[in-house]
Length: 137
Image 1 (tube, rainbow, N blue to C red):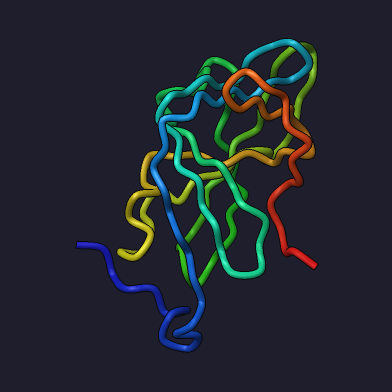
Image 2 (cartoon, rainbow, N blue to C red; image 1 turned 180 degrees about the vertical axis):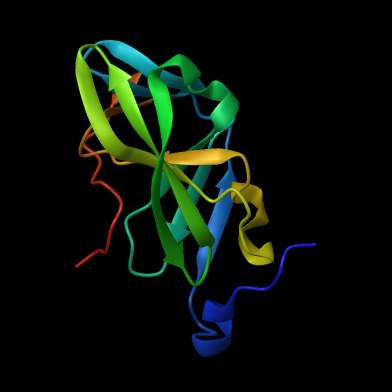
C-alpha cells in the first residue's frame, strides 16, 4: 500500500480531485498525434489549472524517452519526466508521471501529464485554448 501524502497533514483543506472521464483526448504536436485516449483522468487541484492525465499505454511510446529529471509534490509524490521527439521537434521534459504516487492520488499511477504550452489539446474533437499546468492567479 502506498504511503499517505505529507502535504495533506500540513494543509488539510488542500484538494486534489481526480475524475475519470470517457472524454476523447488527443495530444498533438502540429498535426502529429502523440497521445489518443478515451480513458483520461481530469485532475483539479487547489489554486492550479486543471490537468489531463492519460494512460501511458495511450501515448506513442516510440516518441518519448525517459530523462533523469524529477520533481516532488507533497500531495502527489515524485514525478518522472520524458522528452518528446516528434515531427522534427525535441521537447525536453515535456511530459511527466507519478509512477508511485501517494495513496490519496493512487489513480495517477500509470498516467502521464503534458505541458500544454508545448502541445495542442483536443477534447472530443475540438481544439482547446487550454492553459498549461501551473498556479492559477
